[in-house]
Image 1 (cartoon, helix red, strand yellow):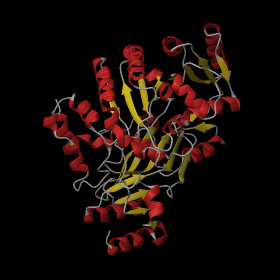
Image 2 (cartoon, rainbow, N blue to C red):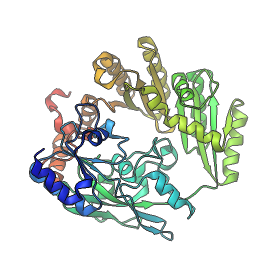
Image 3 (tube, rainbow, N blue to C red):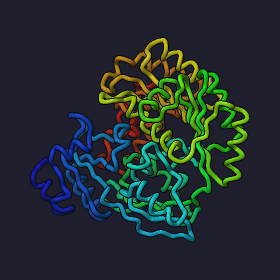
Image 4 (cartoon, rainbow, N blue to C red):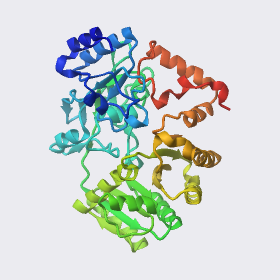
Length: 452
């Protein structure tokens, strides 16, 4: 990067907040091939806008960055350029108890948000897998939600408005404190989940809820996968579980290694309930009647179980990494997919685990193969993708950079969708600088003739 560009960036954010040393660049990339040329730490939205205007003028790729927890799934700076770290923008700008809203900067961590709201007996019910480290902006930009999506829906259900710096450097605001405030397109929910490809989210209006009176976790060890699926169906259909995780035996083993010693040898269910005390206790009593092996976890024991669940992925991936495939199928096909996928994995390899957000029919397949070695398991992944598609669902690879499965899914909505999405991207980002390697941009990089 030219020295005059670095000097201009230092003028915007200050010399101490413009970093080009390799140690900081490595914290905002992955390996040798995905490193930004410079990392900026802006202090406000105006500085973000000034950086974007400079980047647009120079044609520099831009990657927004929060805690970086979701970056390997589609935000890596493969073409260098600028990483914009928003963690200095971490203030609660306004807290409105009567309207049950908070207006916060995007770099605020969920942990700090949770602690600040606790004194008012309120919380923001979004809890992705990494709730202590991830930022509000990161959650909104990637629409991360985690296991509690079953009870609360995804992040988009819990935001009312945004401030966004567009790829042209202009600043727009969407939504407001009212629940129904859409007179044009629903830009708030359109921009949320766009992975930074249409702009950088700098501020968010959050919709808050009262902290539940009681929380309880149920851990149910199962004899086999078929038994776990049947039990999970009962819990989903007959109670109001907030989260319901199905873990196969290899996933349970990884949880054991991550610190929660279940003493089980087979698959297991992890379910979470909250609400008024009488409501939660009634649900738990109902399930204990049905499942004599169920264990009720509260306090530190419950926290340890969920922390081990959060650590399952890094425990499984280890130092070399692993391939993460995400599958969604209709709920009525979920049992068949899980059984056939497990059989396929057993037939081909032993180092693979299945974890399902059961109530949402969302399955994570963890393959103990480094993402760069995808070709070694490509045939297996293709068979799993075909299995999902034959059941009315689809499979995407979350962390390999191979967009062929995503492109196939987009194409299934009609070939014209590629052209439409390309026009949307060009309208927002005429220079094409924003997150050029994001997985949501599969339509930009595709050769549509190859998709059939």
